Length: 206
View (cartoon, rainbow, N blue to C red):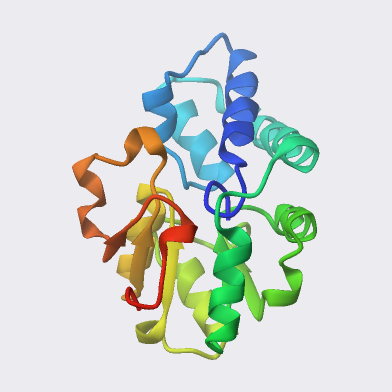
């Protein structure tokens, strides 16, 4: 969802950076990309441990990031190229469509309403309260189960490295659409297909 269907990643980034600035910490863009795709809890745990921050403040920092991100996304985020096309494409081909995300359900509802995609969704899975999140495959396996589909019959779209690993661990096919500045990196080699936008996906790739 984030960074694939809606350009929410800059707002998650802003929310995360603003929150860590309270602790006099400034992340580089490269550092931020390293943890893209993680749940906010894992994101906070990672950076609090890495930066040796007082973990008594971790829970409040997690809540601050989520609140800031949802507010920013609801107000400013725009659909990514090809969103309308890709949902119509799969609905016309009689595919079931599910949404698997590390983000909280509250944000799923905001994005579904903002993009008008609720009518397309046959189910969704959030890793918000799961024991494990991406790169663990649980959120994708749960989504397939919600759709009553075998994971071996699923095509998944991802924009993050952790998400790609999650898909492949679930034994699903992965179409990866990296950020422009990340596109040429060799780490995307585990994906089945790499394209530049949702609009590039067509029947021949199926």
